[in-house]
Structures are given as structure tokens and as C-alpha cells.
Figure 1 (tube, rainbow, N blue to C red):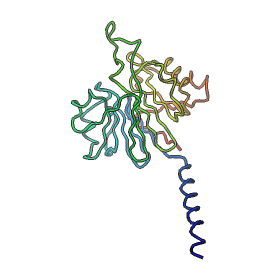
Figure 2: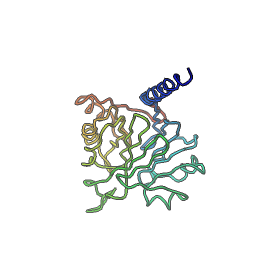
Figure 3: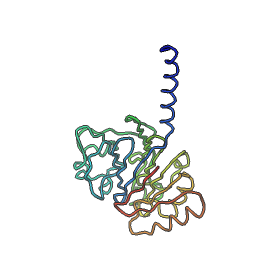
Length: 238
């Protein structure tokens, strides 16, 4: 009787594991302001581009897109950093942040338990601080693909609408800069969202522009749902 039950137990165990793996992953995305986010998912607390907002909960993972002060604030990172916090940032952030830092180049991935982080391109080709000198040169900044369970969040960093965005697939939530000056403006960000085709898109790095322009353009031309948060508000992704 016992031997006859073993295969059934194995089958049921495999079924339960497969059933659990197919369950939607719950993720909460809190916009802290500017390009700063706190994300909870996969049993981890993840911060992106710490700068604006409150920093109370300690971080398991910190992702920094580039070294500009409005994306990489060492004082905020120090507030959330533990001895075992994984900080992923470009190489030019290492001296600014201090301690043990992991850097990923575009196309490189890192698995942290059930979470995967991949760096992608982020740069300006049409916005310059002086002739031939872009605000964000190619090869210095990155964006990130953060995959937790069945959901991938794309944080674009500071960037123009670049060709590489057209290759992104299966994005659940795209976090896109819309404020212009050093990044895409509302119109360009809308074109980027249409090219990426996420389920949801969110405006960040807005400055004093009206993100409703971005929302109207995207939703009028696609099935993408645009989420406009105020600093401190949270989007719950089921």
C-alpha cells in the first residue's frame, strides 16, 4: 500500500509546485518621487534610484541607474543599507556610494533567489549639455529589467526614446521619464510606451510637465493602461 502511494504523492507534489509557479505574483510599486521607487515582491524590498521620498524600510536590493545626484543619493542609500544589501550600480557610482557594489553592463543579468535583474541601455542621442556632449552618454548609464515571478518591471533610467527599447518584450510595467530637458518628453515617452507595449506604464522624472498628456496619448492609441501616481502613492500589481 505504501509503495503504491509513493507515485501518487510525487505526482501531487509536482502538481502543487507547478500550480504555485503559475500563480500571479503580487508586487507593490510605491513612487517616492522623481525616478525613485520602492518595490515589494518576491519577499524582497527593492529600491530604484534613491533620491526623493521617505526611506524607512531596509533594502534587500538597491538599483541605481547612474551617478547624477537626483538618481544616486548616498545619504538615502545609507539609510536603507544593511550589511547584506545588494547594491547594483554603474561603475562610476562606486566611489560615490562606497562599499561593495555590483555593476552590470547592458545585457548582463544577475539572479537573486527568484528575482532577476538585467541591465539595459539608457542614453541620450539628441539631448546635449553642449555640442557633442550628451547629458547621458552611451555606455555610462543603464536602465533595468526587474523580473519578479511572472512580472517584469522596466525602469528606463534617464534616456531618449532609443532603438533598443523596440526589442523589449513581455513588460508588465514600464517606468518612463516624461519631463523632457535631459530625457524623453511626454510625446516621446508615449512613442516609447507604444513600442514597448507593456500592460501598464507609469510617468516618472516629470519635472513640472503635465503627465496627463502622456496618459492621453498612450491610452488613445493602445490598450496600455497608464498609472499616474502622486509621490508616496502605491500601485498594487496582482
